[in-house]
Length: 234
Image 1: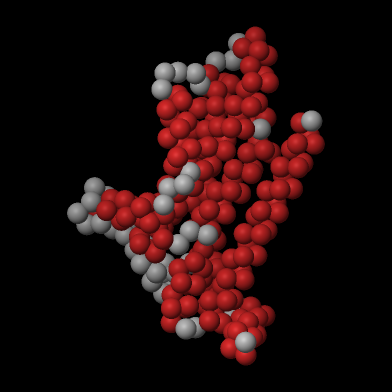
Image 2: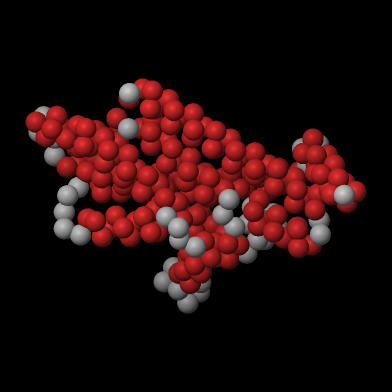
């Protein structure tokens, strides 16, 4: 117990002293995950809205595939992105492997299905409610998607926060494509795994507390937005 208490005491000291190493790792994690979620928003929300509004052959199959991809194993995504970015891969000439950009690509691949699946359900529910009105007003497919995305923007924040939570807690893919390089591609999750294996528990615990705080904050914001949206549209 004394060892555990010492680890937590030292971890609090690192956080209270605004340790440079902790700040550097947390900053990189937020930058990589934030950019990945931004790309995921630009890709996933319109994709989900298109599936929510569209009615075409094969749509149900695409929905099933999209829902299945919500649980993509991160290590599998990491291997696929690694092969694409390696020297012998189709994107090897770009030299992106073992860089923050490679980590952003891997996290984007992970969050897009999750965000698109949530957006599809939100937009599809809204489409059932407004289908007659939008059809009578002469909106075509693209116009319907645009209107419903705007109308559901508050509810869709849940999809964005869910994507951010998935990106922030991811470890397998970013370790494979980023290499967990000190002062370059080391994020909170990869640093926690490394420092724990090295026995540097204070740093691992400090980063774990920061990560847990971020995840809890995201879940709290998502819950508050969901409740607010339910009251607003009731």
